[in-house]
Image 1 (cartoon, rainbow, N blue to C red):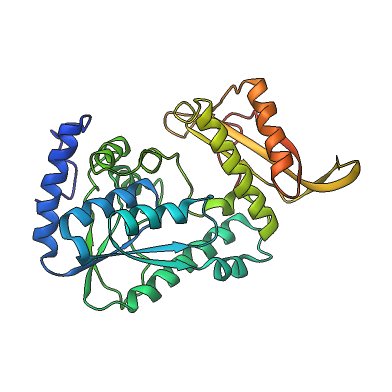
Image 2: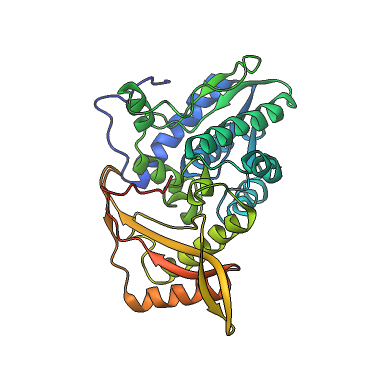
Length: 327
């Protein structure tokens, strides 16, 4: 049975047994809904779309085509992980599109945060639609809609980020197998489906990706500094037991340089800001107390391993007054 709403008496999925029961139920639901038709999914590599992909692979196999668009704003190693997990391990039909140049060319010189978001969102739809038109016989569009998305759109908190946007000639019926689940339940289902732990439990990541962590007009060198410094921060947090303790942590490289010294010479280079916060609902947030010796080690690595960076700052601002992201 396809539910439009979460049943009031639905038991929270908190165990592998409940997760497996949900998977078995949804496999049958998807098979009945789709029949022998083809399904298309935009696979970002995020928790929700990855769980939907794994569930649909189990249900309908090669009737599913996943499209992974690399807009150049993903974190280090993420496109490679999507290819490894879904194409190499799960043998999915995966279309990989490297649209890095296309996105970054469109974003060149644009410094307004909302304009940047709009360009990234619109361009993603264009690229996805182009790939969809190349495929024949697709009648269904799978989406990683989850229950909070529906509740927030009903309450007017935000537009439903999954629904709509595609051109009228791509009139697909929706397949949304996890739309009655909360985020923690989606993760339980992902675990039961055998997805990698660092994919299932990865921290929140904004739709525009690193674009919102490169304030001002995005340049390729500054974007690369964000990507490399973020990778160092994530590696050190994982090594030191903070990955599961801190809700969200990342780096930001703002659009200005500062004077420093490298190899006995003046170095006019970027600075990196580290942000690490804990929250229950993302409406308020507290700052994580990182051990000083660990912070010194992270600073040393970033300033010596990331090209074009000579200074590291830690953001101690809670929410409010600061937001969690910078743009």
